[in-house]
Length: 346
Image (cartoon, rainbow, N blue to C red; front, side, top):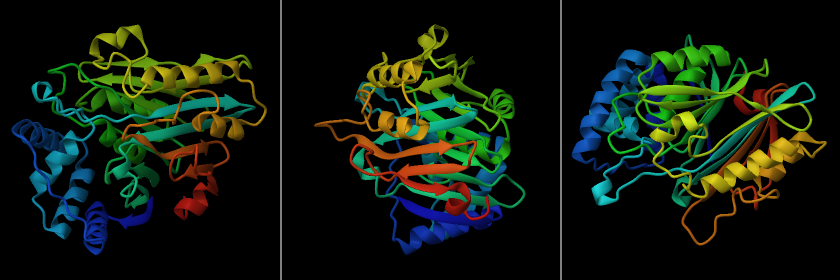
């Protein structure tokens, strides 16, 4: 993973990020179809209204790399929405398993981020320090938007992708921009819930939220409805929650086009749910490592397909400690750090 530290106004951060891409000689040979361009531009206009700071960052970035702002923005705004053109079988998919649990008055978060292998080299862990906004650590296979992160208040926001039904992708913020918005603008789970109710949401997704007060939930999101799924109680009397790549609640099943089978989504959910519910462990961090590395059942053991866990994270939210495996945790060891060490002055 590339590790970046970006500070300044949003426009300045965009220019710095663009400068990094220029130094790396990064190319963006974008080719958007009519649907992507139209829906992306509509969504970009909504981003400018609901999250103008991010749009300002995009303007700085596209100026720095000398790229068309609308085209680049349309691409980012349709990212992670499942760009469905079913008649052409053109579907963008993402995996991922995320969970939270409490143990002995502490709260923990873990994630396997599962994607096509080519994204491993471009994945980033970025410390954002925008002027006048929350500072936060964002882990992303993209940039500007991201899959997961934690901010200076100890709020976790993370997404998991869900395939929508045909016709259910609307103009709005995609899941990876929702994560960025929540980290930058919210301090608690409750603030995150209120924000999700106000933001136009583009497509089906799960948003996991957790904070230092040990509150946690999964918001099952769709352009038409949001269902708040509460944690469950395990054998130790502790709380836990899991999210993968389908909607778990019966209420949201009608918005789920995955049939609970996106890259073994159901198997991953069952592995995490069963291990967390039994709570047969003494060391919470070691347990999370073992769970994410597949020692309790299928989690990251993809075989014979071009898909894998490209990073794995564990946060001890209470103690501000993080563990990161920059690759498949079945093969790559976790490195420990504190949020402060990892991101400077958080």
